[in-house]
Length: 521
Image (cartoon, rainbow, N blue to C red; front, top):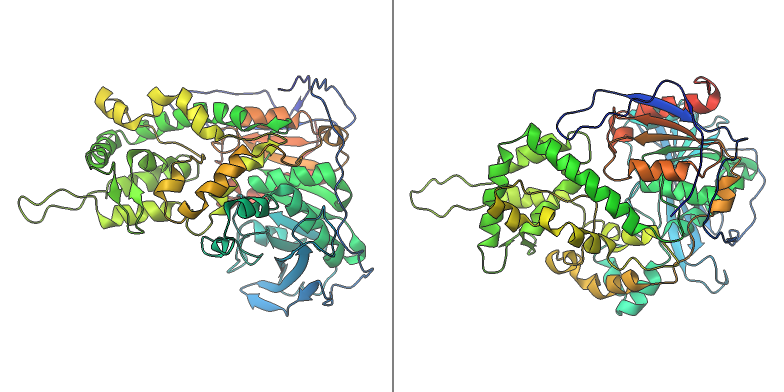
């Protein structure tokens, strides 16, 4: 898809060692790409894109006492241990490309966070973009993790991306207000990264004194949004930090490329899992046989849904790709069966296991994750259920029933959404037709501008996780080669959940790469 030639400066010799049968020893590399060096040869056709500016101009101010206005309501300060917080509500257009007077309006929520005692101080702003799509920003209960570290020098803005949290939240119940599948698909197309960044600019012009620029931290899908920000509104950015969040930026739909690579990584993660917990091979075999033996092809779940063998395989989404995921999955599986306390009683899956399976995912509370998942890879082309199509190419490897018959381990799947989920998961069933329309949609708006990224002037530092199951390492490097000036910290010390697991260290490390504490050479 891309033809590139890029030179990186390495802080130490590369030690890329991969083995499907053993864990890697910690290897950490820091790579940088001087912004003055342009060694890219892109054969793809580039288009220039423009985005509409936010509706109103910013009020010039040098005070942090932001006042409410018709489109911006500011709450009062309140406290959690060692932090001060206040809420902001913004009224924004659903569609920034239409007339601002006639476009329907939605509400966007952002929480401002400062270290206790610093809330009235003059501090630069940092916007946090959450992973997803379809998940709300963190709800701080105390000063901890990366938020605590960031608040030492920043005023942090935790944005609930449109459709999540308190930002006109789209839930399994609220979405039922839209009666036709066609209307719902038309509505949902406005909840992707392009409009999330339009919302961010709307907020920046009203929150940051003198409409100044701010730093952005993007985790996972939030990093995808940050690269969209770099493409279409770099004037609002002081610097950008990415953690497990460098997207593919090719034209068309890149989902097929993503899933081709991700299935290979998932196979590797499955092998690692069963090497750690070989006893689980038999447990999973028993569960698959039990589910397949039922006339309906599975058993009922507490919510009224059905657990089938392919549904069981989706436990890999969380179990194979995050810190402590292997352990959590193992402990869940070892409690799969009810004890037989009456001789001759039927062997059954435990309520504990069935309930834990449903709580393992967030499809019922955050349906946007499933509904919009493949659309995050689409620019002017449909996804056509990419993960489902690519899985068919690996059908022998991921067929659970066949694996049991062949005596092979049953492989779990990863971060993928399949059409059958909209039949088996009750919270998703009402949206099956609308999601089908989204899968067929061809005229998706652009999310990235390769020409702008090639000439990027905004300082960018990125943590790239070598064993990342969610954001493929190879694809991340491919995109990084097309963002001028980006500095990469490549490590296998962390999984995709690194910012959650060791936020202080990761935030500090990336900031050091941008502020001179970790020189280029």
